[in-house]
Image 1 (cartoon, one colour):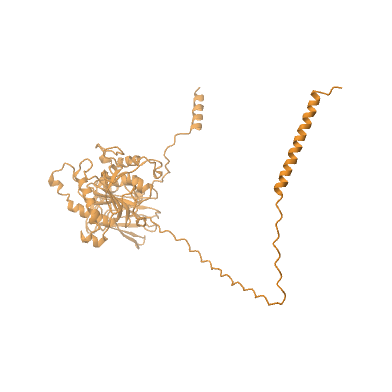
Image 2: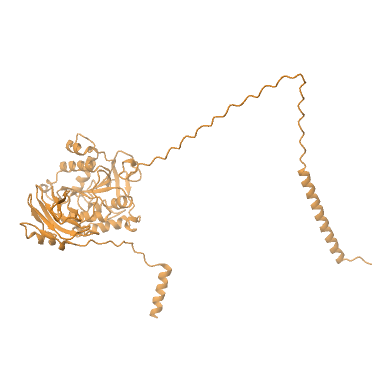
Length: 477
């Protein structure tokens, strides 16, 4: 009986199909190669325990101090991965060959994490602090494959963007703006990034990057470095977050990243958070100020002025836009933007103890409802409607069709004039009379043929009818 049941289930699966799970390609995870390297932390001998294993404590190096790592065999596709307690200023990474020859020198961009590919011929690397020193949180060497969090293979933010999200805190970009990156970035291919206004703790920078990566962002987000102040803080604490500084920071961000469309938060601060309100207000003011050379001339000289084309605010009541959060996205194996945003919010582990969660459509803080608060072009039905497509980052100038060679005009040869008739004494020959066309007899022939056929048919019918009558009624003898 058991075998019969199993056979019956197998038949059902064959007939109706097995459950289809989202496809996920097997991804090669990068191997941790750290144990195969020799680290030298100089006078900070105890740094090895913190920097290589702890991930919660960091080691401070003063100006000009450094640490190094060395190895013997070639390492193909190996990467030195560094996490910083604070984004470093002027930290330099030098790579040397076995004989001491300098192979490369790179000054790191100040990001929370740095990834340095190791040259195949290198055998020693020195990480040198700058004038401000450096605070090393974690260090590891990984081989080829997908790096573990918080390291991601970010593309550097380009010199202009299709869209930019302004997020007051890490996780606001998911909770209130989380439909944009999966839909317009990962799915439709628009180039964008996220600017986080505040990020007070190192763990939240990791969470921000992990969440952004999960939503499909591939251009490195930026951190404006302003102080995170809780919603109910006293006024003396709030004074550390000055609106004038926020406005200048926002204008500089617009000018530096040059986005066509900006998304920011609710003017009412969603649930009333005072920093959310100021971020939305600053984004709205910066819309016009970023294009004014008289405002903050220092950044205008450095980056030039910039005019954003559209500014959308979360829950803004005019010029409404609702992003379709139900549409399956091929970039995420058929999951929709809501499912992606929910997964991204789980990356903000430190925030899971609060009551927040991603809400869509009819929810009070729906993550897919916006309104265009400012614009220099008509709103349209979609985000990039009415924006000159030539301004988009991935715009490709169409190749003009080859011009056909002109066809030479054929000039008709002049008509030769007939020679005039020679005079003659004979009288002119009269022109023959026009021939009378023969009458068309086909209709008559057709009528005649039909008549003959009909008569023959009638005769045949009459013959056989008469013959039948004779059989029935033979003549009396």
